[in-house]
Length: 494
Image (tube, rainbow, N blue to C red):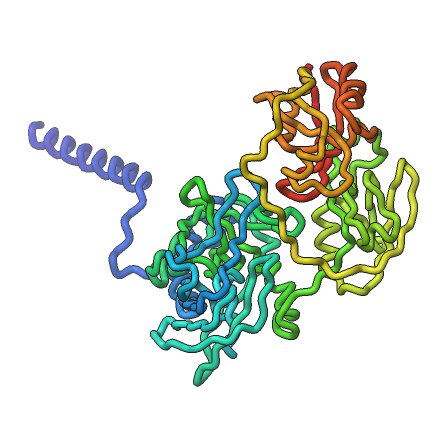
């Protein structure tokens, strides 16, 4: 019995061990052998998969694109000082620019980046990198230094095209489609920050369509990819290895906030830069703004789509055709206009001298306006006058948060206001007031309120004394720092 019992016990133990082994083996995945062939990765459209693929490809993208990136050294004799491109907006960005020498009459030397866009040696960079340069030297990734010839430049978008002549075809970067770019996409910047050549940094797209220097043309891509002085003119590249932007500016107040010109904006003007060396854009001569809910309500506008005219430049095509403030342009040659940006892009893409048929809404009535486009002038903004602040107010509109006073000849001269301007001048804006929230500032001139002229403090008092919480006022304001008139909606808190 003892032997039989022992045999049965051993058999049962072996059976139980075998079954436990099967259960454990079925719940585990064996580790692959070191010599095993890597498994095929299937493409699954998930955020995690796209992130893994993008991360793994950064080194490959940098390896492919690095030979197309060049260092640019621009030297000027120094007779004419370089004109800095400044932003009219508070805490505006800085262009990438090497600090200038202490001797303003001595030679100036600037450094930047560029990238080759075809085998013939055409190179895209920033206008401010080569502006005023008497000699442009380009250093390729293989160490060769070549003299570059300026081909064309566009100060309004800060884009320039130069060319080098090499012994053979040069590696060049493929251009992508910046219109398909999305916030949150991975991007790569390659450049020469602080003279550290071919530095590669990675980040994401933070915002698309930033307005930095010119509200009418700017569509900057904002990124947190680390970029610095010397990156100017270098490529911003997507995870597919295509250039989608030209690095151009950085935040003046924070690190890792950079801006790039969309590559589509450069592609649109490349033919003109190659053929004419400059860019000609169509021009109506009006300043615009979008129609939002508050503006539509306060002005009793019938439509929320289209581009609302804020100001008309004297002797411009718009002025000669009879365009007026408060007109809403809803179509051009039958093509609907959804916003002021869409109108600007459409008109700027047309040749000066061509005609355009505008459909305009005026006081709820539709009308057709024919005009001949002029050439868009370069915009030179007047600088804000330092130390010229209004004296304390003579009347205070407490519900709105404004203190205003009469506009006299002395104030008109201090702020370089257009001759004959009539209105009242803002002398104080209360913090966190409705006017403060609407970006009204000291020194602004109030011309109209809800389409009624404001020629005196008494007019202002009459139009604002009876406002109630929840009311919306549309003020027609002249801003000296921009040199233009704008419409600002002021919504009184309930």
